[in-house]
Image (cartoon, rainbow, N blue to C red):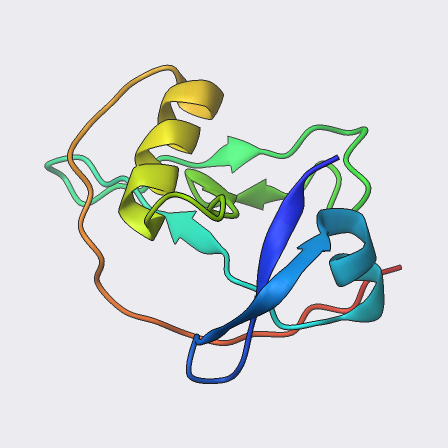
Amino acid sequence: MEDVILVDINDEPLGLMEKMEAHQKGLLHRAFSVFIFNTKGELLLQQRAMQKYHSAGLWTNTCCSHPRYDETVIEAGERRLREEMGFSTPLQKIFDFIYHAPFE
């Protein structure tokens, strides 16, 4: 079981909730997306696992996930990049956004 950080529209923490429950209820929570580009400007994509509970098999950004309550978004991005893609590189925050994706 993994918790996510529930937030308001200003990214102020409101509490923790189990990830699946937050996704099922469509509650706003802190997440991040990592986009890795090479020197040609090409984006490194990954295909989501076919057994994922949402967006299975979708070609998507380099990696994405949720920060833990005790780590920054940059720390979480670096952790997940190592875990999912097997390499490390310095990351920097470029922008914030809010989105809502329906959960089947």
